Image 1 (tube, rainbow, N blue to C red):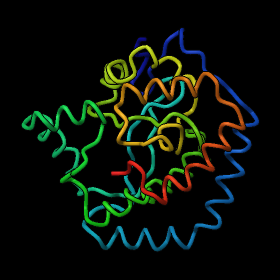
Image 2 (spheres, rainbow, N blue to C red):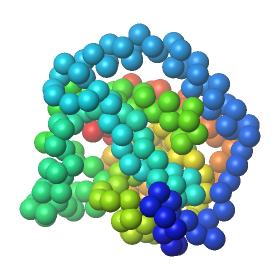
Image 3 (cartoon, rainbow, N blue to C red):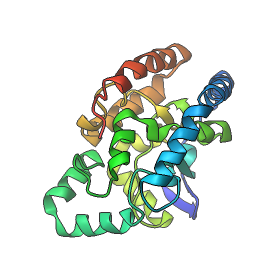
Image 4 (cartoon, rainbow, N blue to C red):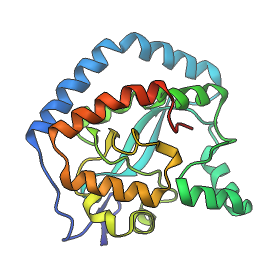
Length: 228
């Protein structure tokens, strides 16, 4: 893979996959969801604003289909200096560095606000990503894009390290709000195993698999399975 410019990681071996039916479903599903969840959005937005200083939403940089840099919209769950704290934690605490390399998350993350813990536990922080679906950056179902650290020009090396040989397959499709990882244990699954699962989904995905994933996401969210 090679870096073509600051907002895209690309390679001749990444064959971007298009699916008109899947895209049509994404647009219909997301539009209906956003319409009926408007009151909940308002309540959550007010709660986040009152919980701690900072913006209501957070734009998380990720790599999307074809290596394009996208920004996943989330309700803010961390204190405003979270990125600086993360760099310090990874430099000073070896056990946290190992946990991050394995799961791309901390089980007890000191950067998260009290309200943020609830939003993450219930996955309510990810509801604004349905706007990303409408914009074409995400799909309702797909591989979950990992959190990236540092400037965009470093994302290529991060993806190579995280995904390994699975990177080409995973980057061939739009990432999703939910997916195989979400219904299989989420944060309890080491990242290497997650990459294999999501590469397999990218290769064999179809409409019926997506429906099954959506159906299983609901109980997984209600049970807070692997969420932190």
